[in-house]
Structure formats: C-alpha cells, structure tokens
Image (cartoon, rainbow, N blue to C red; front, side, top):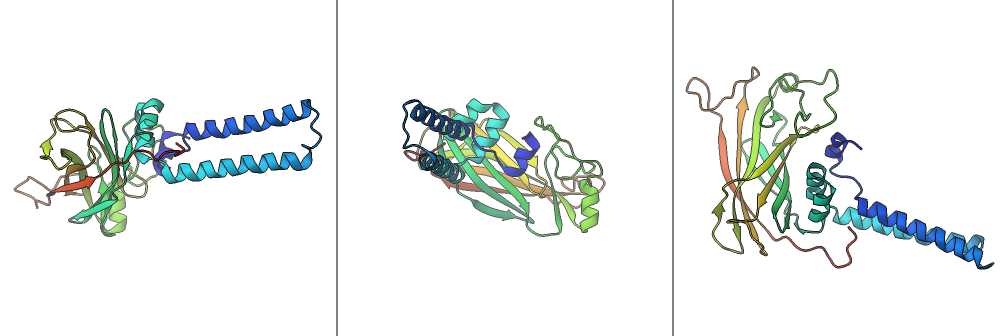
Length: 277
C-alpha cells in the first residue's frame, strides 16, 4: 500500500495485529506437529478442524478489536514520522470528539486527539457546507489537480487529465474557497488558555473534495499532562477567483475573508486494559 492509498483509507492494518495473527498461526502449526510426533491419534481430521476454527476465531476477534480501537492520528503520524511514533501514539490517551462548526460555507470537524508524553496530536477534516463550493488547501494553486497532494512526500501524483480546481469549479458552477484550521492555544484542566509560541500543522487535500487538517503541539508552557484539554483553533476561509487571485485584503476587490475562534474541550482516555493494538 502506498501513501496515497493510505490517505484514501485512513490507515491500514497495524503491524502489531499482523504479528499477532502470524504468532497464532505459528503456534497452531507447532501444536499440530507436536501432536503427530507424540503419536496422538486423537488429533486427526476433527482435532485439526478444531484448531483451525480456534485460530479463525482469534483472528476475527483481533480484527474486530483493531477496527474498534484503531487511531487515525497514529496511522497518519506513523506514516509521516515512522512506525515507532505510530506505535507510541497508538498506546497514548485518545479522544474522539467529532465536534463540528460551520464558518460561512465551510464546515470544520475535529475527529481525534491523542496525548503522549511529548505533546498533543490532532486530526480533523474540512468539508464544503453546500454543493456550490470547491475547497482548496493552503499552498495550492487553482491550476493544480483538484484533490491530489503535492507535498509531504506523496508517491502517487494526480492521474493525467485530472481536472484542476479552476476547471472543477467551472464544471460545477461553484466558487473556489481556500480553507485552513490551525491550533493556536491550549488550556489544561480548567486553567487559562495559553497562546502557543509555535504549532505544527498540515493541510492535505483529499479526493472526496475535503481537506484533512492536523496539528501537533509540543509539551512545554501550554501543553502538559492532564485530564481535560481546551484546544482553541483559528478557522479561516476566503474565496479565490478562477484566475488565482485571493479575494481578501484588497481594497479593489470583494473581501471574502472569514475567521473565527473555535474551542473544543477533549478528555483523552488511556487504552482499555486488554485492548488489542
């Protein structure tokens, strides 16, 4: 699976699950071999069938647990920073607020937040509030293929003939809106919400017309271990003309800029005891 496929699926089967399945199958084969060596005639066709059914049940239960407790944050940052970071995030404290707010014609949703020792990591998505909008992420141009990433080391590029943002907007008779979401302040356990000196973030276009946004906030002055986090994000969007001109901050054009603070309170919880990760 390449990186582009991951972005479409929001993650793949964790390596820990693959290793558990391989280990279970290996144990089953070892038990069968040991039974034959010991002359256990009772473990014949029906005994082997029982072993295989048990292995299948373990596999299905493990798969169900992974599906129930998988982490989009762990998958994405694991892809970006490496397997070790992904495993660390998968074992961290997790919150899935799924809270949304609409600013103008754009809807912002915070899907997941994870706390580990070195900070808070979050992920959400930005979607059009109606069919008359084509979303474009920061650092992209109207001449770029709509919905395809150009940065962060994506391996797959847009297929030949993919419509640009300008072409897609013309086809749909829609406006192009550049949208972004950036975490800017954090409060811990009811304390003051403190402005962040720096905050890492990514904005990644998706083929379904949405934008994936992320943030990573390092521990320090604002972020520390706690039970409840109030995360304040700055949400902004503005219209972009078909020729690429931003319709904002220009006295000679219509100023379409909209900006709004949005505070989401989350309570990340540790992985449940016995949870398969």
